[in-house]
Length: 167
Length: 313
Image (cartoon, rainbow over all chains, first blue to last red; front, side):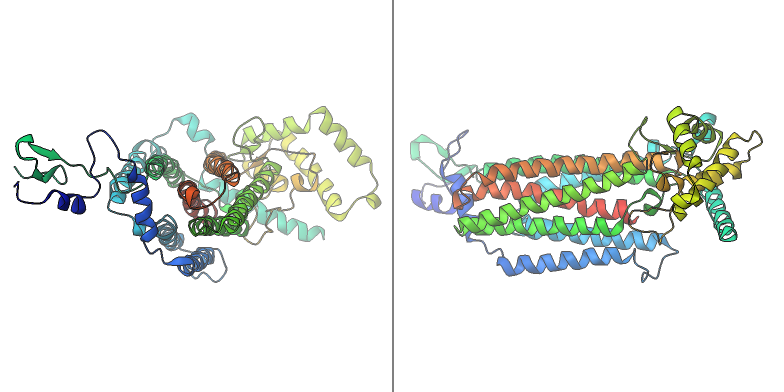
């Protein structure tokens, strides 16, 4: 600290002068001005993002179409769709929610929330994700199994044969 | 001591001691800050919902395929497109308001409102097609059974012995074949077969699987968008017999919970847009539009994850 600097210079370098516990009137408008001066890329950029989002939606829909080559390995489709969804989410957050142009405060809000979100999901695994490892006899009696689906498919194909016979 | 960032100024007023200087808290407006804080709680809210869904789904012994529960992927993709379009129109409304093009901003906002309503309309149509198949989030309306077992057989028998259904069946049996369509003639034959099977004291597990298939077959991948597999419940809408969808009850719970909460968020967004439409949408209200837009983009964001998780997984 020194007494040498002129008083005005600190105002210029440190933004509006405030007193503790009181927000100055011009903070809101200062922030708005700051945004107004930022370059958001304009309408064309929004349109490009829109086109990319439409393209990505078509891409995730591709896994449903008959042209998807990994029908027998659903995990490939899941990984692909999650990658597409994350890309779409990123595009919306960065461009439409203007996060790309925001100051560093964005990390203060988004990173803890994202970490909490991941922990929340992980914490559900022992009790809910692994709930079928040990089940009561009564529950085992009533819950659906893979064999039920096979039985229904078998009944369905038997029914089709019978229908053909009737026709 | 090193001065903490922006807490103590470089100068002091001589004998008055140092002058404390503060930066404004965050370089954003208060409305936007509050909206972002709200959205960070929303991130955790939907993360818990989506996380529960993923954990429930992958922890389940059986999970129905989308076409087993009459989900239409093209309809879901259309709704995704509608929401993406509405996100773009909100952004365009904000840009127009900032550029003081008030009527243009209003037009974009109105279009957003229309697109949001269209999304809800399509969702309502989808819900009604679930209800048509007896897929409800809970009993007593829900008619989904997990497996073709004795409990299922007795539920079918109970439904078939209700007086109203007995009267309808009697009326159907009394009609000459010339009055009936091909589907109804086949349906009548199948209904008789189902009645015999559920009343047979020596019924086997396979018989009940055949009963379930006759009532509401699990549609194959090539079935139409409504998932009508031509079962008895489709031929005779009044029958409303219990149906078997392995894993269908848990699916219904998660589906209605996730899409229901998302729909509530959409409705709130539409109310906000209605309120905004009462204002002059110029530079002065741009902050409000931005906050509403942030919320709406978040609603879009949730759907971006919901669509593949529910319709394509």
